[in-house]
Image 1 (tube, rainbow, N blue to C red):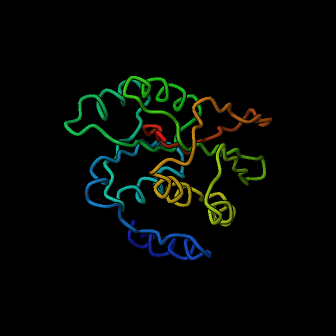
Image 2 (tube, rainbow, N blue to C red):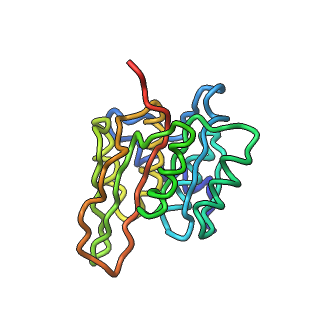
Image 3 (cartoon, one colour):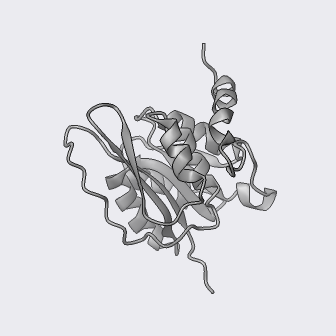
Length: 190
């Protein structure tokens, strides 16, 4: 039986790409308790994404249909307001959460759209500059990109760039569901 520990140990090889920070690195203690991961676990990539976020010490919450209820329960009703919220959801869910985040001064600082193809492959479209190691990590992950996507989002917790008004890329395969990895955080001020 595959366990989270075995999965993460096996996935460490994915992070061994040149220049990639090691999976399992933890945020400084003053940051990890303010990191929240919201994941749509109805998609296969959600499990590895949540496992990686938990390894970093992030609080996690699973989407169970209604983004507004999730936002209320995981963000507004929480004793600790998150400094950053990351997720792997559908594009529509991100749209709702992005608008709710505006009330807290949060903006989309990282966005990577994951577009499925009929042959089972995925195309990844980033809307901001990613670290040099990130595209290779995503490409090497294939259809199991959840762990790689979480790793990129977690290593971008300082904000990669403003993606607030990024439009989803065209997706010609109407019978499949595009996903998106995102990070909501306060914009950096110069």
